[in-house]
Image (cartoon, rainbow, N blue to C red):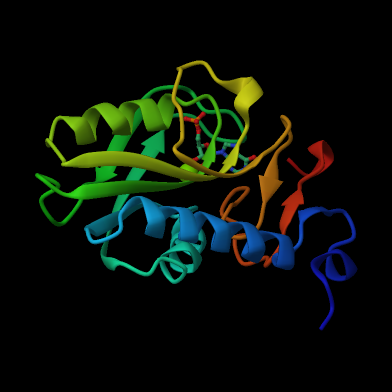
Length: 182
Ligand code: IMP
Ligand code: MG
């Protein structure tokens, strides 16, 4: 099977599918341990977290359900404006649930900071954040993820659910998008 970089040589692979699968399995084991004997609800942030949520959930050996929200931060391109708007709310009640918010990337933390406040207002039994990637050096709001796949430097990444202008979400690897393509 040709790799992404054979098809799109401009992209540099940061994490291979094997590295991602290994780390996601570890996170799944951690969540399984932390919530033994309890049920959980995964709440994915559309669309970027969809593939991570699907893989993570299948590594968690617990009674679990899914829900999804959609947020938009005003502004386009690769920079978040910091102003967050809820486009789609959850379908089910979060009250007294063990909620795991699943996000692709923690960048400035503004999106997750907004979501954390919103979800805490619904009085869940517990609220955890799972982020596949953490650009820790870019944080503006002090948001801490309980489950982090990889801490990465300040580079724009695509693939494994993550996009640039809606493209590249279907790449199986996590790749760096060079500035000339942004
Ligand atoms: P924050 O509010 O700055 O933490 O923004 C988080 C959101 O910005 C993530 O959920 C992503 O949708 C998007 N984002 C940040 N960095 C990247 C990246 O490198 N590639 C793709 N999306 C990104
Ligand atoms: Mg996102």
